[in-house]
Length: 310
Image 1: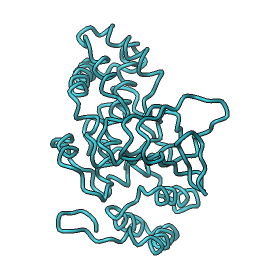
Image 2: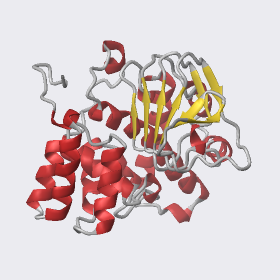
Image 3: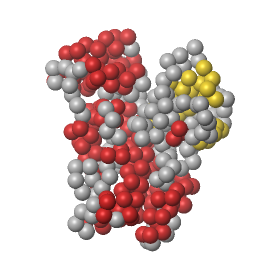
Image 4: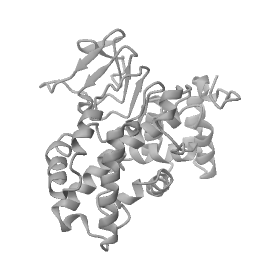
């Protein structure tokens, strides 16, 4: 039975899935004592919604689904403001330190934003300017011989901020890869020439996240968790693949089942999941995945000629 936890915001009987009532145009969630949103794993937003504030309060959220076209999270204007005067490293760092790092825009557990009709965050002019400036600073730190995160205040701020923005980008990119619904031409254009994560890369990102390997692990410009590994989607996916634990135990099966129940394993990557499990001779996990698939025929849907699922 659905339960209203905030005017217009409901959870289903499991308490893991939330949705905003259709017809609502704006919603602002302010911190409130006694309200616990940490059990919610997926959030569905209607196409009528034009603005949603407070997404960072869903501390366990993994996926957002949105069918509308609006820039509902209102990221564009703050990004333009943060990207002013990027030539002054001290002033730039101060803005990031006081306005971005203490107020993370999304929860660290978020994996994907599936929004087939919305232009992604990386499509904005402000985003491109800001990321170009941050890339320049990261490259300078790398060229300086691997200045460590703890060697200077500016490098700490730079690495943490870069991680936050790449997290946002890859959430939109992974959502695009996971979606079994065709993206609109305008939304697709926002991704430019960015490659689409393959099914194995999708599962690597998802499994690493559900096993606790979140974006904050990338915290310096040298070492195995250097922020430069987040620059390229394939490099990032390869790094995530290396940290996954593939032990066929109760903990792994629980983690995999959470991804299945949250709808993050789709018809696009379900066959690949079975293949990855069988190649590793994970018989119990394979059996669990097959049983789940037998109850959810949408996971066995066949692609159309255009590559989307019917």
